[in-house]
Length: 123
Image 1 (spheres, rainbow, N blue to C red):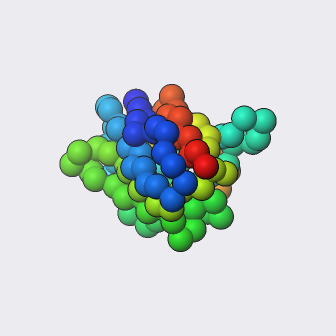
Image 2: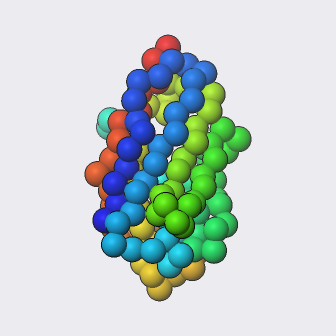
């Protein structure tokens, strides 16, 4: 139901736009988050946009990432600027249960996950 795309190899300081395409669900009813997981590290939340369109940015993304939602296109995009090598990871989008209107910093609160897209920033 969720498919992430847009990852790739980029140089330090570059930009990427990730997209999470939702099928079979309407984004009006779900909060969608972006997480990332680097090798040997725990999965961490990067950003989330709630059912009502409120964006939340967690420590890894503040000031450099922008999350947006297009209900008609059924996509949630993560625009990333001024990329650094430490953001290299597999990025996942995830859906929170329809029961909740807000985002959550806890990965366990998300019930559907996309397959991930690799982001690599080279120095």
